[in-house]
Structure formats: structure tokens, C-alpha cells
Length: 512
Image 1 (cartoon, rainbow, N blue to C red):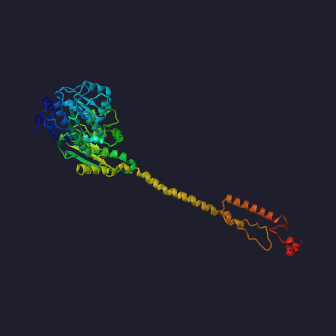
Image 2 (cartoon, rainbow, N blue to C red):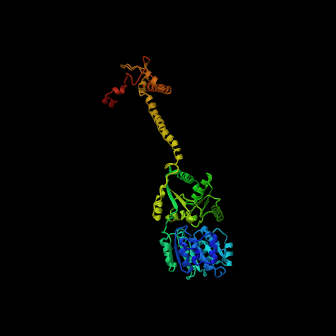
Image 3 (cartoon, rainbow, N blue to C red):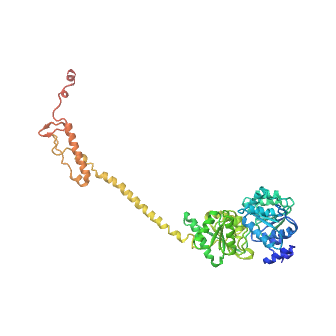
């Protein structure tokens, strides 16, 4: 088995490695360090957690041990996609270069420009930066890149995902053509391949694992989740997450919980705190000081659950992470490899559990296609596809549905009442409006009015209305018939007399 002492590293670097407790290099370290020490360009492809950081820090320290940096002109440059990864690389330099007099500067966002300018003005051997902050310093005239001898691009595929490729190309153009380039990535997208073909000169390619594979020491599983109701999906999904954590029991000493969106990171962290879990969020919108405190607490073991966005998927070197929970299926399949790579590091066993909803099934298929294996399905720890609480809200709905027919019947009764009222207004009222019995017309004996039936059926108000109608009809008849009485009887119509002009013939009327 090859040892670090066989790699021709600086004796002071070897002493620091021994003090750190390492004896044998990982495959990517054994493959990348020798050609890097020879001054060749290196293209390293390895899954996360395999020790890529030491693959370039160890040879850089050895090569930079001789020489001295000038003000504003760093001798080497390391580009990282996130602040956390840049800070971790800086820690690696501190660990392995503690016996070598090298200076370094860390250029990341969220930190004062003034402090960074002061460090650059003194001259640095190693400059570790994120692309955006590096270009900010360059455009302000505080940085000159003409003396860069070694340039490192770490986690290049993450650079691509975050949209840093144009910045990377510009930075390449600002550095000398004769520089040595060390390029590391977990996957090789076509765009990454184009950059390596453009800016690397005959690189030594080291690929220690199948592209985009996951560690065999990581136990994986996915829970296919379906909410009882759409409006309760988020609540029930968080409940499932808590049940998965509880189901792991004492095996889950600490865990990183990944969410796709920053707002979900905050929501899940607050929910876990509410139910008594020791959790804290970390994402790009938080202040750098808060992010640093949270990470330090997680590394120290004072924080058990770290709820993170993909900003923390790269560069979190916490060897003892027992579990990774993917609260969401990652939108980019490559992120799954990096997320679960936070567990099972340095040969330890790890567990990665993912929750998949119906709309995430396409992303799940992309993940399985990338890792070239089917992720085992897990049983719902709540005992079924629907959480137990989901059945409770169904009762009010059933009650509401049961009440609907009652309201319908009440409306039908009201609508039925109207015809009854109309039916109770008797049509024989017209007959009742005939003259009262004392009214007589010759040759006609009026029938006796049927008053009993209306009295039984008509309501009191209707009866009064009918009586008023009779009075009005009688007065109208008197007006039409005049006030001539024959035998004390009221005359209806014209009576027996006929006007003289009617009895005249047509000829007599013309003569008249």
C-alpha cells in the first residue's frame, strides 16, 4: 500500500500530515499528487468525500515552500463555488502548512473589503476566493493576477450549476498562459469538458470512481409520499420527516437535512425546533457570521440537525455525519451525489433517506438514471400512505355533505308553500261575487251561494278580502243599473223598458 512518504512531498508537509493522523492517501490523492508535483496540469474526477481538497493543497504547499509573494500579486489561486468550501480549503492549508512559512488570504462575500485589502497588500502565497468577490477586488484595482503560478478550480460542476462559468473563463484570461492548472470535479458535463479542452494543456486525467456514483458504504432509501389532502401536504411531509428521524433512533447521532428552496429551509428548521429537535438553518441569504456560527456548532457537536440548501452540499467536511435526509428530491440529479456524500466519509457507514412526492417522480427517475441503480423504497413510518391525523378533518366534510340535502329539502318546502297559498285562494270567488240573495232578476232564480267551503279553506285575511270584493261589486252593479227600483228591487242591466229611438226603424230614424 502506498504511503504519503512515497509521494515526494516536503518533509515539513509530511510532518503535518502525520500529526493530523493520516498515513495512506486516498486513490484520488495518490493519482493526482505525483503529476502535480511534476508541474503538469491535472484533471481529477472523483465523487465527493474522497479527499480531493488534499489532492491539490499538499502539492501546492510543497511547490510554494520556496519563494516569496509580492504585494497584491498572489503566487497561487484557488477558486471555490461557495463561501463554506472556500473556508474549508483555507482550514486545510492551515492544517498542512503549519510548519511552512506561507501566507494566505480568503476572499469571500459577507466580509469587509478593508480587511481583505489589507491582507492582499501584504502579499499572499495562496489566495482562496469565490469568483464574484475575486473579480470585485480585481476591478477595484486591488489585485494583480500576473504572477499566478498554480491555479486550482475546485468543484467545477457546481460552478456550472451556479452560473460561474463565464467568470471562470474571464479569470483564466487574467492569469498567465504558463500557469499550472489543477481542475477537480465530481461530474463532467459537456460545458466542463469544453473548458478543460480550452484551458488545460495535456492534462493528466485521474478518474478514481465511475462518474457520478455514490459510495457503497452509504445505505440509501426513498419514501414515496402522498398527502391526504393537497392543502395539508407541507404539514404532513414535515411530520413524515420527524417520523423518519425517530425511526432511526440512536443510530441518528446527527444529520443534514437538504431542501431545494431557502424558504423551506427556514420552515423545516422552525418546525423541528417547535417539536423539540435541536436544529438550525443555513442558506445563502443568511449573514456570513450566522452561517459560520451554525457550521461551527454542527462540527463541534453542539447542534444535531443542520437544515441546509445546496449551498452546503459542497465542502462540508464533517467526517461523523451519520445521516442525510433529502426533504426534497434535488432538481439536478448531480446534486443528489453531493448531498449524500456528506455522510459515509472517511470509510464510515452512512445513511441517506429521501422523501419523494408525486411531482418529484421525474427528478427521482433522473437521479436513478445518473447513479445507475434503483434506490430502495421505504415503508411509511406512520403506517400507511396517509398520516393518522389526516382522517380527522374528514368528519366536518361529511357533516357538511350531510347538511346539504337538508337545506335542499327546506328550500323545496318553501317553493312548495307558494303553490299552496295560491291554491287556497278559491277560484269559486267569482261565483261568490254574484249578487246577494235579495237581488233578483226576472225569470232567473239565483242559486244559493256556497259560502261554507270558502269559510273553511280561506284564511281570515283572505275572507275579509273576499267580502270587500263583494261590496265593491254590488256598488258597481248599482251604478251600472241606475237607482230605479221596481217593487223595491234593484234593477240590473236595462230592465224592461226600451228607449224610443231604438224601436224606430231605419227609415223612420233617417226621417227623424
